[in-house]
Length: 214
Ligand SMILES: O=C(O)c1ccccc1NCC(=O)[C@H](O)[C@H](O)COP(=O)(O)O
Image (cartoon, rainbow, N blue to C red; front, top):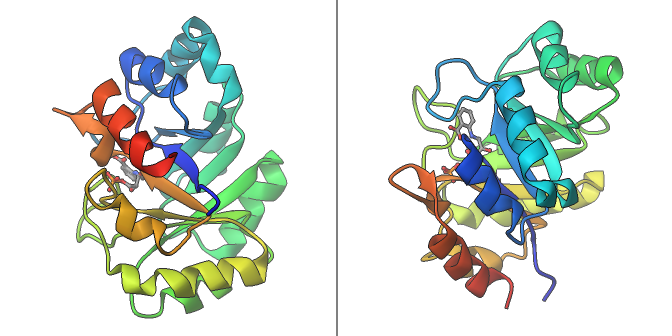
């Protein structure tokens, strides 16, 4: 079985980055969403990256919720961002515009709901990938909540049809990831499941990768 790509999101201080830059993740995520608990500033991220050269081996994901092009440009002009993740209610037109104006790959988050696959079809030919996350009232992400994984095959098959990767997110952790691996997702995206008291933990990441990467 092919091991899924890993994205470790919500790196919010230098220690988090130090830990995840030494991990098996291919992608490290940073949350540029005002007011949320994992919000970071591009100037801080720039400094942390310069101190941890292992981070050069990772692809960097900048996460936004309904941000303007100017807000996105402000971040990506300071950092070597590989992927912009739109985690709000950005329309297909907005995603296309972000892609055209920045020249950076864009992933669209889909908050799982009954017509989630149909929602994905709206972005066909526009999004370069998807993050399927739990829908939690009043929050955009990083909630630690799972959704009903029986829906995962539908998302994966739509991703295959569009020829783009689909990352499954929302409440993934060491205790449940084996169940998720049975669906053979292209990628797994997690944040809370790697944390102890809100900080990324080397021990937890080692345990998690012991399950996923063996
Ligand atoms: O992580 C956050 O705090 C966050 C805040 C606002 C919008 C999105 C956010 N995270 C998005 C991610 O890609 C997370 O990795 C994803 O939601 C899974 O999080 P978790 O359930 O904590 O593993």
